[in-house]
Length: 534
Figure 1 (cartoon, one colour):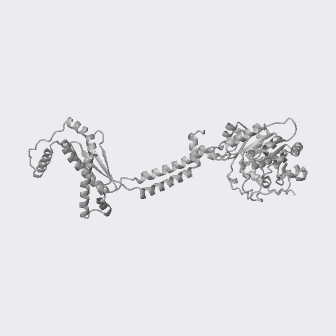
Figure 2 (figure 1 turned 90 degrees about the horizontal axis):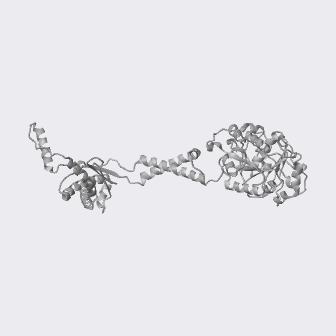
Figure 3 (figure 1 turned 180 degrees about the vertical axis):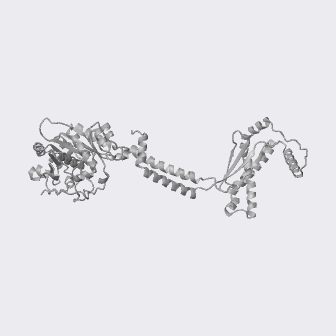
């Protein structure tokens, strides 16, 4: 089970921030459409009640009248004393707040409110003071509104809020509710302990939905959906992402990490284009333009040279294979061979992928004869081998025509004898074989080789498939000298955008570029003429 930490989350956000932002913008658009066309605007009208008033309302009324007359006549008139408010009155009123709240929600109050509101609506429609939408409310069997009652803590006030889709209905229901409520108090409790402080006004704008809140919520929800999608892909993805994962899961040495070069991503299809240019980027002028790629193969070359030692003076024979197709096996093999030859070593490169040979196309070589002709006895080795490819001590033995029984040819004594004979003439012999899980040729050739190099494509090769391939090779007692981590993009995993020496030397391996069976066209590179084998 993969672990989820802050760095992983941040890596997902950095890698997919454009998609996450785009999903958030889409969420804003959806929230805007829903708010404008699907959600009915609601209007809120509020009234406030004070939960204590003089027990004898006549005293309050008389006091108010006397005060008014006194101010008008500018005379000193003896007024009756104002009713006093005791602590017991306030405590009693506070205890009544819960009773008031329950009383407002009773059917007794609601039925009377509905009846009086309908009467008021009919009267307003008769006077022509209702618009067409409000006039339809008179025809409804039941008015649609909601009542909310709240009393703030440490106060003696009661707030009644009426929410409905019509502003006029909200105001009428709010004012009628408070009037019916006070009348009901007098009937039920036989005293008046409530007084209206603020009556409801017609709301000028909807209280909901809130456009700002909905747009913000739409963006957050859209971004979370995209992030959750990429997070799910992260947990479902079983491919190798980092070089450390290769050594941890496979317990094998990592000979090289080949980073991806953006200049080489525009690759044409070498399978369908027989005139595709060479993809040898480890040496020559192309290596100068792609320094990280070339330096990566040089470090890979160094690690491979010191990976093993032989007791007898002969060539070291390595099988280069991968788990599945399109992991960059052939490209890695050819560039590794060129890098070895560039260091002065005598190298023989043999195309043992007799099922689907591409090596000739990587070298811009149209080969009509090759290893197959040698193994069946039609030609000798010296007749079909291409000497000094690219002016280097690199000899190339193409595959030749596709045989009906490739595995049988590789199992033959002729193949073993050819390798034994040519190992006396070279320092290294590299065998490019088919993927080891799909075809058994890699295991067949590996039995007579000194070691096997396994190419893994970063972010593509399934880790479970690689483990099966490693176990299969180990069961056949193959010597797996190490792995090559191909097409790694450091910037996607917070390793930094441009790096080569520091990371490479600290681990003792280098970086290059492997992309399927080849690379894109290098338009400015000089094409060295290689003679075709006839």
